[in-house]
Length: 248
Image (tube, rainbow, N blue to C red; front, top):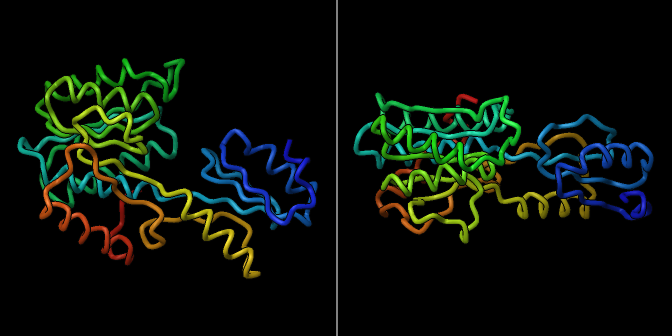
């Protein structure tokens, strides 16, 4: 399919399912520039291939910080996918953010079991895990990892506690959502296209985060209070300036 675009200056592949085909196309067509957006596994390739990744760990750190700010019980929890690189980054960022905002907070977490035949696609397990954490006094749940994470948000809503999501569409807001950690793919693509037009093409992998305004938090149906948002913004500024690390 990608071979049909041979001869174009720039071809953008916006799905991790295209990872192998875009690498093959880039090697076969060195005069064409290729951009692969947000793959699950970052490939190596020729100099005409650029790969955009996003600092999910920074966005998760902000979610954790918000959780640490709003928790009343001092217990927060995260429900994640099956321990891939993004899942580990989300967990590290969330837990470090919570501890930064509230030292001494108890941060619980669980990865979707590796033997589960539906990675990122098990909302029933996600909801069950969220309810289990609620029974351990967690009053803020972070659900990250496809529909597995969305299930955790539903479990939080059923338990009457607040939740934080990862890349949750507004139409899927279960009603408990304070905010969702986001990657702004369109901004990253625009930056890369602008560089290509200006003759500043750079192959290889580029990780975009808060410094590039490419990740952040988006308010949910139950947005935080203004003072809480100001605290999170101060933390975001420190992360963007490289004065804080996420632990990932």
